[in-house]
Image (cartoon, rainbow, N blue to C red; front, side):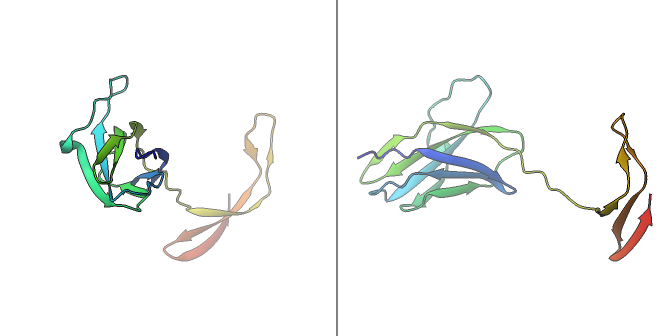
Length: 139
């Protein structure tokens, strides 16, 4: 029976890095380790000072929100059964928060055409919310 968790999936949310791993049947706890990573550097073995959280057995997901934008990290997971099992392989992550798309206006009708220079010609009608009021105009 394999007692070493395998990071199967990691992704990003607006609050941090989402780590997922396979379920270990006999795990009583999981220890999550995080270290700073510099591109091209050798990945050292984490120590207890790199422990960021201990989770109960049955957990297969963790969100690390105590991170810095554009900083690279390496994560490790260890399952705890009756003993501390070996570490997982390190997974390197460079976190950038997702881009938030804000809409200031909604396109209602486009009466223009594209010319040969790929520039928009003609008029464009749009609606714009200003202080809660919907206003229309031509441009």
